[in-house]
Length: 422
Image 1 (cartoon, rainbow, N blue to C red):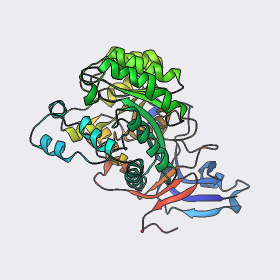
Image 2: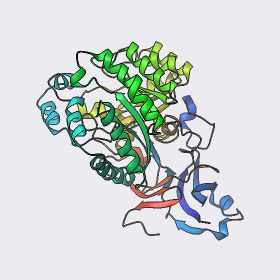
Image 3: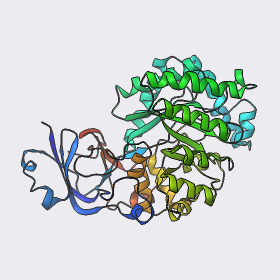
Image 4: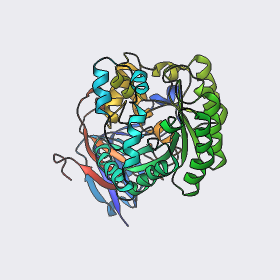
């Protein structure tokens, strides 16, 4: 039986509190203990809190000590929106954007999502998994212990399933937990550009049943926006997913007010993501339906939009807000949740406490894992990180570097810096 007693946490953020996604003032409660400790047994937390109390647990004397030297300890980041299955970066798109071209203009000229499709279709499952292995190591180094992994760059049955199998293969050999999502409705493939409704039928009648029957996905997602999929098409896709046991997620209100948020509310989506153009009515509908609002400010930053969705507005409207990287080759080649935390506080109007809650507790809820991850309390998985910091607010204050000194997944140390001695 493997036991570890983590001691000497200068600040221990547990996020102990109410079950489920946090909203309103609850997002500002980090469950802080100064002089904290965590007792871990067989990958799960047995006790977490003040050292004097945790050390009295009858199993504490039997545990191996892990002294974190007064550093900050908190749950591992849960990145609930990412597109990590791709074959190559979109460097041509990047250069065009640097020369002043817009996202939709680049897509209309054959760039954007469709420029990734050809490369993914040509790549093998093994090649895609190998690249995903590479990304996984970088996410772990930056403190992410759980990552959503969307398909969406195949856009035909065989290629989408290939992407999901690559996720499964990579997940079998990396410490990073990967949560697979079918995003067949990411864009209409070029061969069906004159028959978008026919493509939606293929997603609903072929891709979704195959992904569900093969156990390759937990969620169905759809890009509901101008130039991509309509409200009616998005609802068809998500309801088809529900029919086959795949929970719904949606890209909504990113490029314009598309109606995607209303779809999310109607189908009971686990999360609605982006929400740059969501109206007050949209926010009220999402709140009433219990949908987590996921914000991905790294995409706004990379696209040079000069505007961001207001996290403050969403929190004040009573919505549980999650933060994610939106890691993808075209609009957010970012694996650092620490950068996202900085953007949340400097551009979205969120406090450090709210941002950290959004990157842990609410991120877990946005993946349907709120009962397992994101909180350091008895019975939860021992997924945690140690920051080389004296104060937890430094996680949001410093940017451009990596403050993670140690990463633990299911009670095992999976990354530590050379400076960290255990």
